[in-house]
Image 1 (cartoon, rainbow, N blue to C red):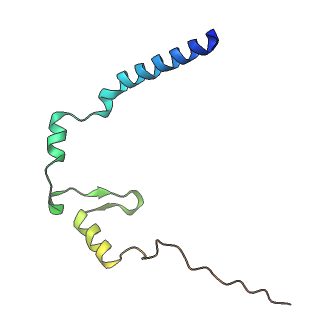
Image 2 (image 1 turned 180 degrees about the vertical axis):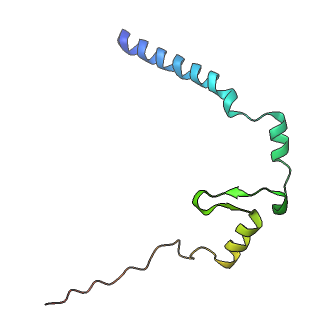
Image 3 (image 1 turned 135 degrees about the horizontal axis):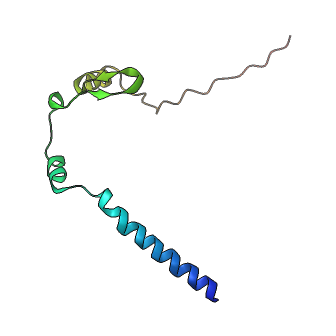
Amino acid sequence: MDRASLLFCTLSLALSLLISILFFPLATLTQKELEASRLPVPAEEMGDLDLGDFGSVSVPELVDYYLENPPDRWGGEAPVRQVRFQGC
């Protein structure tokens, strides 16, 4: 290998390591958040969820809607439509 290739590989590795060291604390949870995430919360105690254009909706309402309107069993794909070519 020539000198430029070794220099590029070394600098790339060092830069990647530096970026991971700098940004790792931003990706971790605090001890308090970690303990809170391990406790289950009833749906009634959760706050409302903001769904953008649909407004704020409570979690029990979302569960009721899902139970009344389950997703399509076939993954939402529409059946293939038969195309008919007809004359004038």
